[in-house]
Image (tube, rainbow, N blue to C red; front, side, top):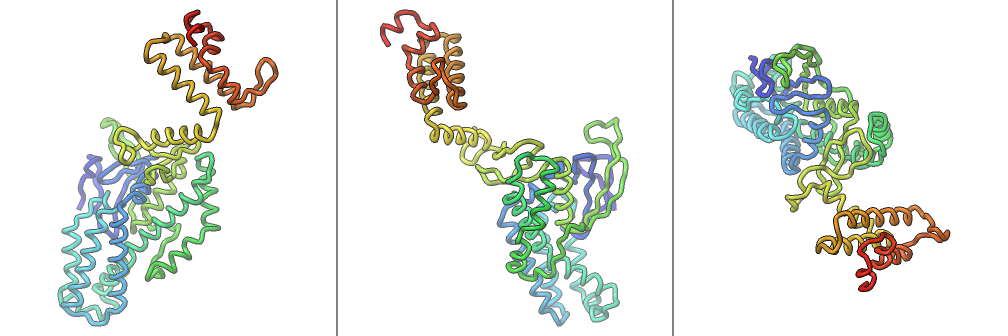
Length: 387
């Protein structure tokens, strides 16, 4: 059964299931059934997913694995619970990346699983060579790890970003790749997860991804008169899709970083360190985290530097005079340039015309109104008399 991807009309994809789902890729864009994203954004979507959903999926997975581990008899009651647990896991998983971006039909998934409730199905499970036994084993193995493998991957990328990517000065493919190498060599996270996650030995998370790659033509979503050649991607697991997205993002010098204001993750670009995301800051609907971060950084810089403190006091003082129309636009701009120039000289350790080091005490004298107006020729005699 084929159907159109809603936001990519003109291209048909096979029907998605939890066992096999499909995305497309062209250059640096990942096309999904629900949203087109730059490579790296799918990883960020997972990192920013609600914690309660990921923990609930993990809990359901662990309990399902324990249930299957102790499963001996196959009867109406046992197989009914087997299917009910799978359905509950599916209803949680479909809310999380990458499944939330697929066209998985939950009703179809439920109907397929319901077949395992029937005596004519579970009656053949004692024959390990039967088709029914193979189907049962596929469900048992897959749903015994679906949540824990996703949590494992989440933890790996979180550790990689917070403790390795965060130390990268220039954000580009070379440095991201070096950070990944250092992470693989030194990070203890896998051993820690193995000790913390029940049934961790069932998880098969590695850099070898379960993905089938093909190619096909598609109408360009941005130009109906143009055809593009896309990669067709068939993933057999959630963590494979996220792994693929993470590494492709790194190839385009993009990686997830944690915002130092809201603590959500954002996708970096090929640039020097950016510490804040550009989304609305918590409890400040009129400011972004980047704006809040810049203001806090300036505040911290000013609080710890007497030169900056002297400069900011002078700037505020002359702004008040400008606001009250005591000085003209031109004079105010001249004053600002002078304040900035002298501040920069003080920060750089420059000396004045007498060879004396310019300090914050020097600036206090230079920025005093009478001295400054006289030096810049502003205001005339009435200013010097009343200063």
